[in-house]
Length: 383
Image 1 (tube, rainbow, N blue to C red):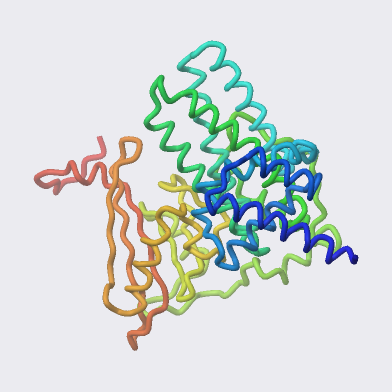
Image 2 (cartoon, rainbow, N blue to C red):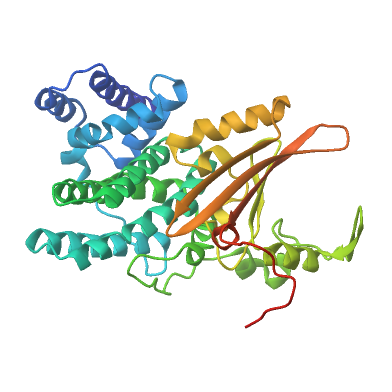
């Protein structure tokens, strides 16, 4: 049997086991025995690839995988623990993720020994870790056709966020168990698969923009020295890279002229978060303002906007874009309170002079102070 046929057969057995779970067969001892007898040891990459193929084929949905992913891992756990956690160099994104996980494990141990509220507050910083995964690692995995597992994990992240927001003493044990399970899934499934699928150049992209989101508890090292195109071809290569911005002089606009530099400065000085999605639903731009209302980093550029949202809200995003494309709606608006701020979010359909849909502009604004304004102020008051 060829190597290709051997691995295809293993994937089919894996799929059969997962489909039995989804059909309601929860006889875990029996499934574990079958798994061990027929497969022996299996890699994290094989499991992740199998789940992705099931999702791509339409046999199951990402939501269904999310609901049963704990059972999936339970069946595969004995095999997965034999796969070593990737040992990477300080400064590599995976090294930072793993260092954060070690701190989270330490906090969970302390909480189980002595329920100190300050340790629980510290543990909540794991959300920064999740946000960085969602905005930096997941977009690169999507570009190599590996979106299913990341969508599943994002859904679990949101469950943990809700647990932190609603946590009381009766739920703390469940919260800690769920965070610990996520650490296991990351280190035994997500990270090994990502290490196999992403190139050095792609890991550089994962790293670029990490600081804009931040880190949980740790400061990344600086030992990782990836080889870049500049290292091979010299600094002049930057002049021909797609991401470089040519000097266009003054840009002729409908009502004036401005340099590209001034346009960028103007957009980043507006008291708004702006994002633009093209007619194909891909993110083209976001304004890199100093104080963001929502996490954004370079990893979002070129990403399908649907994947920039947690699975539970993706249907709302697509409903808005579908209405904009059909021309039945031009504006959608939402408002919510986050961390004491009142946030106003608006989506505008952008059409050209012929009425053709060209994309969507998202505008988010903190209007906390604006809501409190009364009367009028006609004189300058800087005091």
